[in-house]
Length: 453
Ligand SMILES: Nc1nc2c(ncn2[C@@H]2O[C@H](COP(=O)(O)OP(=O)(O)O)[C@@H](O)[C@H]2O)c(=O)[nH]1
Ligand SMILES: [Mg+2]
Image (cartoon, rainbow, N blue to C red; front, side, top):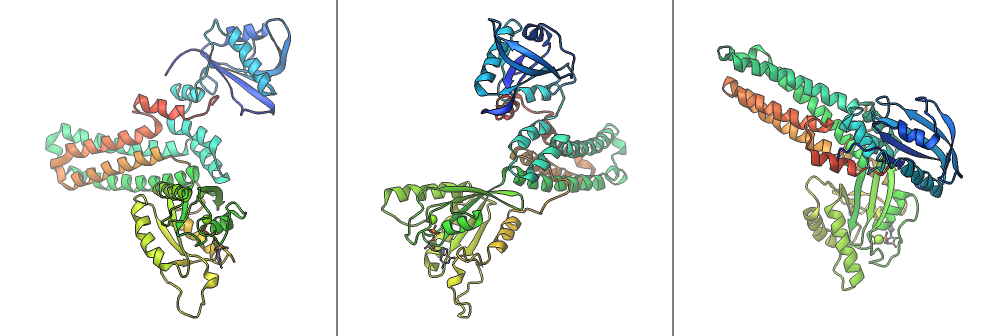
């Protein structure tokens, strides 16, 4: 994975554009530059140049910028060719570069290889490298800002300072282990317990921050489920503000999943409207219902919709849905068609939130309820973006801190185990920024990048 050959790729998105950029990175690009333009380039200067094919015909007039190693994105020599942004033209530029760079071993870059090199050359740590991909993929303004902050190192700094605090604590413990006679009263004297609880508090804050960051990055998979005709598609349309799904009084209208992404206060919500759950002999509808269950099994949040006069079905469905929902996936029960309820007749159920997809009643309150239910605590000053991977590492670290706390409570008899748990917690934190990361995981992370990144 860590090959040393010079690489090339189109860095801009496929399609027509004013400008398209071809980027090269390698340990020593000067011979390739010379071959392309018959001259050297001064670092960090935009130079207008002509690129010609083997027959001397002009391919494009372009602006070239050369970044000399190590002062570049990848830490290697980098050459950026800012061409006109036509797909065919960029193809020709690439081909010509590959032709002239053949001798130097120039090859087409693999997905994420530029960023991988930046990581391997210590230009960014792993969390920052991931933030580059997250910045590019950001689905909302808040996610852009969070990714930019992670890229600047806000998340990594927090991780590193926590690792440092744990290191200090470990040094303290391990030095005591070398002098057994001093072990007595160690935990009290060194205020080890206080320091441990400070670490724990910090870690908890980091986990909360990362949890928010994951919501910003990935958004929420919100599944609308319920019996046919309760108004699931109407609610989707109401939330989306347009007619995305077909609504009719005929039960079984929605047969396939309809997806729509919206934002609630900057939080991306991927709403999945599903086929109503019921027994059916219709083959297509049955397939749709199977897909509904699939969606439920992958949801971050389920809205279980009911309607007046459909309470009987609801009682059966509620159990089945709660059963199929992933652990930790909240199920929000709503009663739709509140406009049909006689508000004075006492049929209003207190258990379910009331809304009307038809009139819009309760929909604003529902949006707030959704944010609250997924644990969104509003736009934060220092928000970052985070991934499942980060949350997993933080969770494992927290488990080891918990264990170390138990050993600390045991007094001096368990000092060694105490230190061991601290070290394990550190390892998991280190994986976030890439220290102590297994190699296969590294490949997996970077292969998810797009080509040219
Ligand atoms: N009165 C009233 N009718 C609604 C409301 N929401 C949906 N409906 C009607 O209920 C029927 C079924 O709606 P639809 O959204 O297709 O339900 P789905 O099968 O759950 O997707 C349609 O005739 C809708 O116009 C509501 O809030 N109030
Ligand atoms: Mg429907």
